[in-house]
Amino acid sequence: MFLSSFRISGSAITAGRLRLDLIAENLANADSTRVDGREGPYRRKLAVFEAVEGGGFADALAAASSSLGGVHVRAVVEDPAPPKLVYDPEHPDAEADGYVRYPNVDAPKEMADLLAAQRYYELNANVLDASKALVQRLLDLGRA
Image (spheres, rainbow, N blue to C red):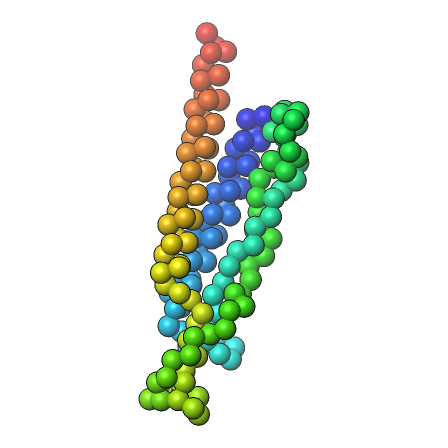
C-alpha cells in the first residue's frame, strides 16, 4: 500500500517535471521565428497526461477507483493555435506582405501555467515526504 503511494507521487513528480521543462522551452522560444530543420516559427509544446491503471493502493481501498495507479505522459504535442502575425517589413523573416509569423506562445499564459505546474510539483513532493514520514513512524512503532 505504501509503495503505491510512493509510485503515485513519484509518477506525478516526474510528469510535473516534464511539464515544467516544456513551459521553460516555450518561454525560451517565444520569439523564435525560425526553427532548425523546419519551416515557420516555433510552436508551443504541451504535455498530454494519462492515468496509469491499477495498483496496490487501489486494491487496498476496496471502494476506490482502479485509476489510482499514477500518471504518465502519453505524448508531447504542438499547440494547433495559429502563429501570431506582426507587421515588421524590416525583419529578415518577413513575408512579401511585411508580416512576420511569431510563435503561438503567450508569455503571461505560460507564466500562469508555470505557477500552477510548480504548485502541483510541490504538492506531490509534500505527499511523498508525508508518506515517507508515515512509513518511518510505523517502522519505529514496530521496533517498540
